[in-house]
Image 1 (cartoon, rainbow over the protein chains, first blue to last red):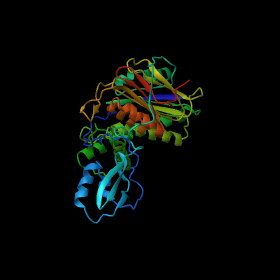
Image 2 (cartoon, rainbow over the protein chains, first blue to last red; image 1 turned 180 degrees about the vertical axis):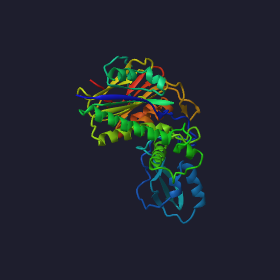
Image 3 (cartoon, one colour; image 1 turned 30 degrees about the vertical axis):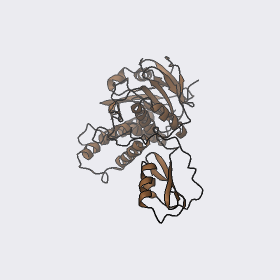
Image 4 (cartoon, chains in turn cyan, yellow; image 1 turned 45 degrees about the horizontal axis):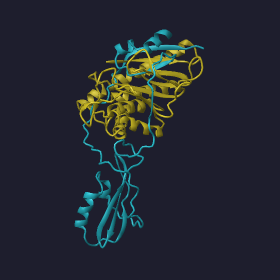
Length: 163
Length: 242
């Protein structure tokens, strides 16, 4: 079978690693994956969209809301629309009794992307013994950033063996 | 700074055609370099940095790259940031993506069996010249002539980021300090563009990156990690060679 191999050096700009982030995103305080809320039973879908889109849900906003809106609130449990933020979907529910907000709860992403807040990932990496082999391989994956480090790499040896 | 690119074509075709395919890949990679280099004054990246070019006026490739970097910033909790140092620097995405595209072009041109290795980040398809999957070693983080895993892959990507090569150049954005904890992070999955970015982001996270990586398995991205103190971890379905 024919094959052909070529190595070109110097084609790509350095693989600049991620370095730092000017990020102000704070992980929301650790949350123990609260399942919806036990105040759920009716859902006349009010739309507390402000609360729902807030990154720090629940407590603080609910007490303010309670002060402001003492009257005109219908009793019941209201669930906000799920709101997307960078952590995933947050849904806020409030419970109204006697025209006042008596409880507020938020559900947090359980399938989002965040390592910081999504609790209890099921998947885990398993620990093993670090191997040190000189195996017969076609290619080598490794951190090789410069032409110099390429020249010293196992991949370079493989390339020259094939050339 | 340059990156070495190794290309192997294992298709049963005349040498002349294979050489032409390789030349085509090299042309594409040089085109990418001309457009995205942070070292060339006339690259699109440099022109955007100087404000001479806006996102609305740039090339379709640049728009794709900017959008992908934004997605990755979100998907990695901000650990992947094309603006980490201030000015735009999408190199961390461009490398993997350009190789991914190069492999797609090879396939479209009829090469079903090949690999492209750009500085340790590899996209491969099909089978080895002697048949069977490609056997790919993951470099041992302390001994450059040894490997710590051997994987068998027929269609997929593998990317490794490590602190052993350039020292602690990766900053943990939460602390502003060099990332510590992980010495080598390898991610294996369908797209090299994403695998590369994920490996780099996890390295920046340090040991919490272990849990973050574990969750990527749901999206088809397996991982193998060596910590600074020499512990090794791998995900359940890492395609280890037998």
